Image 1 (tube, rainbow, N blue to C red):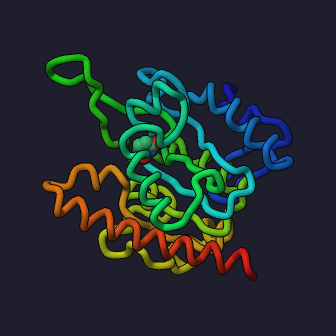
Image 2 (cartoon, rainbow, N blue to C red; image 1 turned 90 degrees about the horizontal axis):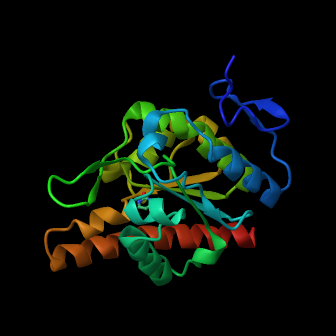
Length: 237
Ligand code: URA
């Protein structure tokens, strides 16, 4: 029987959610390194066929805050690193304003390959939203990252991340900036005690004018300030 990339890691343990087998977490960095290496060959959905490479999560291996975006964009796909393009710049600016050091967090995506279609004219690659089946296929990697990093606070950036982790009925518009109740996502809460969702930084880039962009940026920073406060409390506890 063919095994998936995630199954080929050593020391398999059952994952409670769907009985998928992944490596038992070893020590912080080693495990992330092993996961990253295994994810290079992931063929769990077809997105790898048109992507340059798998873009795995990055950051502090013992980060107390983990941010989860949607999927790598054009620049991330080429560079092989998450949040290094325009959405990453918005995120960087908001993190700075909220007093969160990017070097101390872990950044990843719900989907680890860039999904795109060619522009009608020119060579541009247009971002396409991942399908539920693609999000679902990629979730074992996200769960594995959660198990290794063990963040105190998990931040879903946008609806793809929130629906991957909190269920398909979760509404970021209605529930942004609020701590998520455990009945909504008992398995996720068991891995990260505080779970919160906010908008995806790319939504701010799509604001219709500069006034709207400023308002949306301020609301995003306000949500990240809640995260920053939680992180400080968790550190002090
Ligand atoms: N958007 C995301 O969700 N993730 C990235 O890494 C870049 C853009």
